[in-house]
Image (spheres, rainbow, N blue to C red):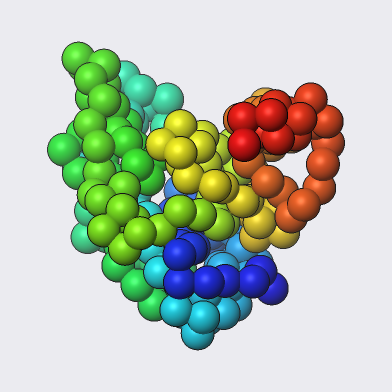
Length: 210
Ligand SMILES: [Zn+2]
């Protein structure tokens, strides 16, 4: 279990039926285990006075995000359907931030992208963290190579100290190795994976900036 403090937030990314349940349209292997691990972390975070925020992919029935409408993904997480609901093993102890409601691509919990104009639109997540003076986020959920990756990279870009719980994430691995490459990208961006130091250069950069 991670150690939590009130200046921290646990970000539980997209632990929804379509990703976490074997009957889901974009099932990620290991998704149900992630739901249970995320719940343990959520209980610990809430008990320590940290904020727990949940993100939900929340799409209209048609969006350029879906293959049938010219995108790349099978239909998933359509607003108000079973697939968009949180997995039943996920304990929900805080606010939910929904992304993609207006047809945007919503990989990051912090930002969405208009698939037509390419414009980046902020969600309410950063505001939720800033208004509570939160400086560090701990990220878990689905999937390592998409929404976890995008959320963690945005958190770093926005200046949050960012840790990723490697045993509470799982990858789609559309191409073999996608999950591992996403972890490398997150490490390169300065995300901490439980104190594991793989990138000595990155660490000294961090130290010299401090
Ligand atoms: Zn989606």
